[in-house]
Structure formats: C-alpha cells, structure tokens
Amino acid sequence: MVTINKLNQSKENDFVEILKDIFEHSPWIPKKALRYSPFSSLEDLHDKMVQIVIDAPYEEKLALIKAHPNLGTRIEMSSSSVKEQMGAGLNQLSPEEYESFSIINKQYMEKFSFPFIMAVKGQTKGDIYSAMKLRVNNEKAVEFEKALSEVYKIALFRLKELINK
Image (cartoon, rainbow, N blue to C red; front, side, top):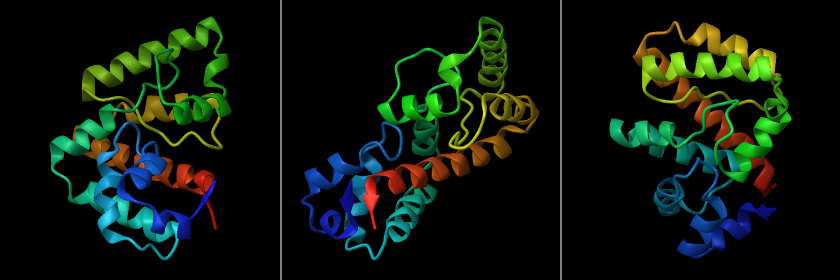
C-alpha cells in the first residue's frame, strides 16, 4: 500500500507505475491526473481521474471500456481483474454456467461491440449473470454510460485497496 502523501511526492514515472492498473490497461489516465497533484485524499484523486475520462473523446472512452475482459471468460487479464473475478466466483463456473456466460457475453458483444462491465466486488456469479441478462436489453448509449459508471466503481475499489489513508 502507498499513502496519498507518498503518491503526491512521486515523480511522473513512479506515479504512473503505481496507478497504472486502477483503470484497466489505461495508464494514460494517471499520466494526465498527475497535473492535478497534490491530491487531498483518495477520493480527490478518484474524482480527478474520473473527470479525465469524462472529458476524454468518445474513442478514448470506448478504448477504456474495451480494455476490460469479458466476465466469466478464460482470457488473459490484469491481476486486479483476476482477483475481482475470483472474489465473485467467476473462476469456479461449472461447465453449464460457463456456457451460459459465454452465450450472454456473445449476445452482449454482438449488440454493443464492447464487453459487459460490472464492478463485481461483493457480487455473486448469479448477481452478475442476472445483471447481464437485464443489461443486454439496454440501448447502446445507455449501456455505454452504464459501462463507464461501472469502470469508475472498479477504479474506486482498486484505489481503496492500493492507498492507505
């Protein structure tokens, strides 16, 4: 863990290295956030990073969403994603559950062209599957914004695990 004070004193390379996994495979966000240093708190840092994403062009937001793995699949992902999915039991799907997740993931990807994103901390695989079934019926613009809101939640969970108040 690192303190907010240590983070505020970090040089650019160290700052980006420490925060590189907060937003999945998107070190451009902490790199831009550094200009707002010093941060008064973890929440201040999170707010600034979220604002960077909000202000980003659509293409960068889409790339951020696409950097996330499909839930319940067996592809390479960041260590943070692996831990989060394990906590929700997605690494222990039965063959039938895996097939169900694969089908709904495929439907979701075909409709939206980006992966289903959900902050899975504290969720069960049943909760996640139910949310997928519900959200696959959303309009693309609604789901795009929902995906971003889930990305922001994931980033906050990750910051809370990384930064010691």
